[in-house]
Image (cartoon, rainbow over all chains, first blue to last red; front, side):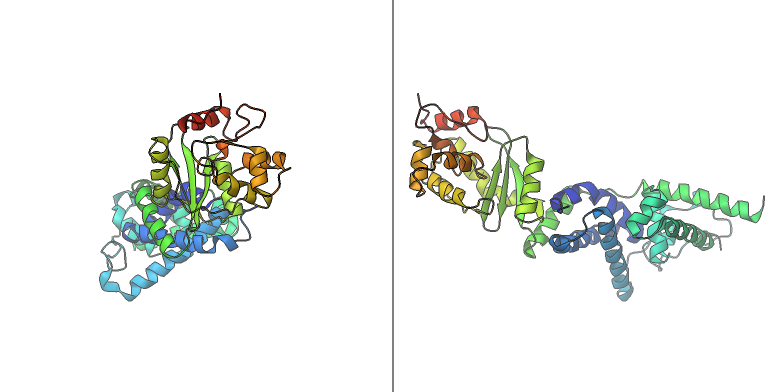
Length: 162
Length: 213
């Protein structure tokens, strides 16, 4: 199959990729990261061989750009806004129940997860996808997606209750 | 309740809480995102085909330009097919970018308002091949307000006996209106065919004061 007009990718996936990035790296950087994602995709697009799963391809790029953004932030810690990095500590209390947490605290905890667990958790709960779809988008098996979600949740539980 | 049950409950609540918080994430402003993306794509030479919809008395026209010039004008009703065609024949880097089609839009508006008789636009002939190039070049030389026959354009293109081939080439003209295939009519009289339909051909010729009786 020949690649469809690039605009159709933006129309179909921009909003969802944006939610994925907001949950993964925070609202401040999500839009710029989404720009980077689409620019990188646009650059590679005419040479793309396999156009069967363009959505998964976009998620692969978005995830890579999200990791780049977090790394860049690590080097410029002082520029990082509160609530989006390790500086804004995850609230720790022995009694914290999920419904008592603030959104910021919750996202801080999600963002402290290793990249694959974070992506899996966001796909599962923020984008409400089945494990099979998560696997497709992350380029792994359904089982690996399930394990990443389970491991992510376990780790989140430790983060917020310890 | 066992420790394992508590873990499971907690994780279930956490999942609900994440979904809930996720539904409150700020929504994307697609207009702003795309305007900035187009700017950066153009700066990096990654905007190969820009298109937009342009209103006209003949309906919403789809106008597409490349860095070389105007490559396509399409009548309503086949937008998706036209974009697919551009993606495979020119480049899949196709973006909606109204600011890039402004010059074409202004000239089309002036033409339909009767203020412009000759388009002054760079053209990109990427979608035209072989004999059709000669035919459309000859067609582009037929002035506002006059008509020519299929045989005459064929002769002008160097093949006087190719009137029928000329008709076929004109029927798939990728840049109607600007490359005035509506000015080509049958020697036997009448309007002849038109890719956009006979009504549109009549409208254009009447606009130019050149409709045959």
